[in-house]
Image (cartoon, rainbow, N blue to C red; front, side, top):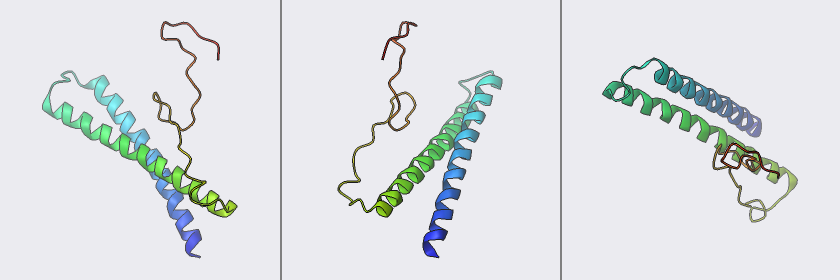
Length: 112
């Protein structure tokens, strides 16, 4: 029963993290759109708060993803040393094992 409760808690944490990431991103975009003075102290405080919400949400999603991966490794009987292969994250998006960009930086597409 405890494992089921932990799985439900993990799922809820992931959903909440995704919601926070979306909420922070939307609030940040709204601030950029409607705030006339980007250098105003209240605007800067609001932007910092929104970035913090977004980053915490993304971190929650990553931690849930890592937790689910560990549980899957446990179910498959993979030892801790085998399961700790480094995950390469995209520099642009932060996504694990994301494909390389096809943009060459000059607007031209490059072959992969």
